[in-house]
Structure formats: structure tokens, C-alpha cells
Image (cartoon, rainbow over all chains, first blue to last red; front, side, top):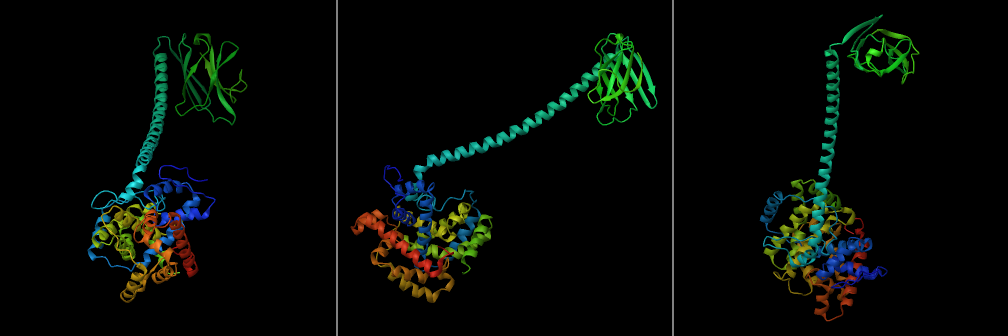
Length: 286
Length: 196
């Protein structure tokens, strides 16, 4: 239960409340040797029993200050303090003092320079640890900031990649359309059925058709539009689609377009059908 | 309850918000006690002025570390002041007043202060100065002596044991019993919820 002996020894038997109270009383009065104070401060940080004991003793010790008759300081001290304080930044410290460091307070640097020896003796051995903690804190903050920055950059890159991907797909599509239209054997067919109009550009040896269709009725729930290529009496699926505002789409055929005699569009159950089950809404020969 | 605790809470809020008004309130409320304590310990007014300023600057700079769950603001401020003064004399640059019966000295000065000061100066944390003096006077002589030598003269327990020529363990016991007696006395005096 006691602290392990080390250098200037400090042993605490936590089963002995009087002993705990004794060391707490001494610490509250700043009456421990500097090394003992340091050891006790280290210990009290993680010992609720000792921390509470020294807290109670400090409340009593503070009252001893009242026994001293109040003394009026010189009036200039007030102005000097206020002027200096207003130019001094406040520190952000996680609440832990006053009951740390045995002496309740961290070092005070006086105007005559340096730290008081008792505090210096108490704190100097802690400086490497404090320095390490500060360094770790700084590194952690930097890493967190960098992590956030990396996440931000990753999001930006992902967005840019998506944009580039869309733009690349559009370029590819435009290139395929231009290549098809520029083909010397390309031909255009126009089809109309009621309010539905369609134009299709094909080339005999190309497996691609460029279809522009307008006036299609809204899709019913659970349905898709499906494109059919007709080889004779047999229809081959060329894929499903949802028309956008432009109404144009590229159709990828299983075989060169010269193999097909006609093209049509129907509404089919969602996901498409092996063969048309619905009415051909618009179509024609190729 | 008097207005001490709410005042302290307000001071802490002001200081933690970085409000310069809090500096004035803090200084005006505590400077006489802090300055007197430091003068008492270091025995040099010039050094005490410098240390007093450093104590209040320290409170201002590090008020964010004050945790009201772990003690009163009064005890925190006075602990800073006491520690600063004790470290000063241990550094050897100042010497405390000659050791003699400080209670008698305080009693004599109390009579002067009672005539010269308003009652607000004699109350801190709900405990009147006179109550503290009476409580000290009622301590057994050997307990009061070790308390005075450690608190007002800044001696370590080992130094007290050496100076008095008695075992260190006895000093530890006397110190503990003295503070326990004072605590019990102040609690019975109605100090609960204030500084204790």
C-alpha cells in the first residue's frame, strides 16, 4: 500500500489514516522537504485518498493567514499589478492545482530572476516529464490537425476524381458519338409514334447506335424502358434506360448493327425482360 | 452565510473570462491578507511587494487551473501566497521575523486592526480573524508552536525537529493534531460550506 522507497524516502500506509493525515498536513503547510514534496505530489495525482486529505488540510492552513493582522500595501502596487496583468496572457491549464507539487503552486518567477529554490527543486526533476508531455501534446495536436487536413484533402480529391470521371465519361461518349456520326456509312433513321419521336444513328460495322428520343411517357413504378434490336422475328435486348432531359443515349449492341433489321423501345418490369412483354412504344426499321 | 463565497465565484468567473475587472476585484479583496502573510513570513516589505505582485499575476495567469471541486478559491490563493513566501525564505534571500510568540504579537496587532479596519477585512471565507486567533490560542502550546514554525516561519518538519530537539515523528503528530483540532473547531463554529 505504501509508496516504494526511492531516494529521499516517502512511505505512506494508506491503511493508517493518521499517517495519511500527517503527510497531508505537512504538505498543506509547505513543511515537507522539497524531495518529499515532489514525491508526494506525484503520488497524490493518482491517489484520491491523499488528494482529499491534503485538500482538507489546505483549507485549514489557509485560515492561518487570517491570524496575521492585515497590512495595507503601498498604493502604487495596485497600479503596477493591474498594468502588468493586463499585458500578461492567461494560460490554459487543465484544472489540477492547487494541490499538486506539494507546495500547491507551480514555480513563480520573480522579477529578480529565476525560480525560488524550493519550487525549483520540486519542479526541476519533473521538467523532462513535463517537456515530454508538452511535446506529446504538441505532436498530438499537429497530428490531429494533419489528420483533419488529410481527410479534407481526401474529400476534395474524391470530389475532383468524381468530377473528372464524369467529365471523362462525357468526353468518351461525345467522342463515340462524333466517331459514329463521322463514319462514312452512318445513316439516320427517324421514328414517331404518337407524341414519341426518335432518331437513331447507326453504322453497319459499328456495335454502337446513337439514339435520341423525346416524348416518352413517365415510367410507371417498378418499370424500366428497354431497347430492343430485331434480327428478323427475334428481339435482342440492348439494355434498359431512364431517359434524361437530353433524351439521347448510346446503345451498345451485342453484334454489329448490320446484323439487325429494326429497333424499338418498350416498358418492361424493372431490370428488363428476356423478350418484350409490353407494347413497343416507338420503333422502326434500320 | 456571508457574501464571501458568491464574491469568490464571481471573481473566478471574471478571471476565467479574462475580464480585467476581475483583476481589480481580486486584488482589492485579497491584497491585505496576501501582503500581510508574505510580510509576516519574509519580514521584508520590499520583497513582499514583489512577491505579492507575482502571486496575483500567478492567480491571473493560471486561474484556468483552479478547480472549485477540489477546494475554495480562498485556499487556492492563500496557498499560492504562502508557497511563494516560503520559497523566498528557503532561497535564503529573506529572513522571517525572529521567532517568538506570534500569537501574542497577532493579538496585539489585532487590537490595532480592529480599530483601524472595517469588519470586511477581518472576515474571509466566512471565518473571522478573531475566531482563528482564539482557535490558535486554545491549541496546546506544543501543537501551536510547530504550526507557527512551519506556517509563519517556513520551516520544514525536519528543521523544526532539529531546532526543538525532538523526534521528527513527534513533530508530524503535533502538526496533524493541530490542524485537525482547528478544522474541528472551525466546523463547529459554522464554517461548513465556506472555506472548510
